[in-house]
Length: 183
Image 1 (cartoon, rainbow, N blue to C red):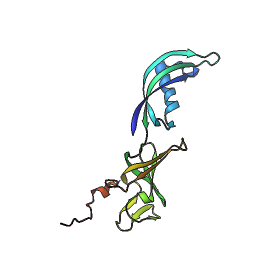
Image 2 (tube, rainbow, N blue to C red):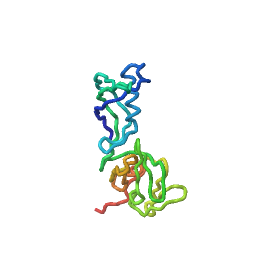
Image 3 (cartoon, helix red, strand yellow):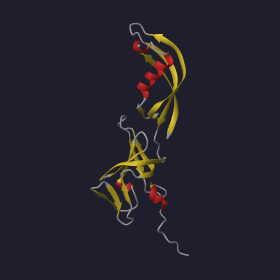
Image 4 (cartoon, helix red, strand yellow):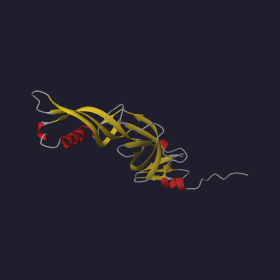
């Protein structure tokens, strides 16, 4: 899920940036420090959305830089269990598909791609034996997040399923169900 997160931090403006207006220099330093930053608490930082307030600057002796206590908003993406995500298949391997869900890829294990026996082909497709459904690179899909791990903070892992009703390749959702109801 995407969030706007309010953060307070002391930001260092180096002497080389002091010729610029304070807010411009501060925004540049905030973007350098936070864009792409990942943490378990706030998720993945997409961008600095804006500066809310800035205190007076303080100079530290022998540093030459000015430090500003600032309050600012970050645009973040924090994946959450059970969240529905929309994405595009970026790659396919024997063990599953990589679904691009914005700033990060999620893994759809082969067993979570469809309710069928699934086989991998050398042309990088996954095919269902009974259903004849085929999943290939660049297919648009809807999935549900089933696992989020920040074990490696610089490389969070996200697991997605497409086996539940209403999930999977967009074209599959338009197909009528093959179950005929008995009266």
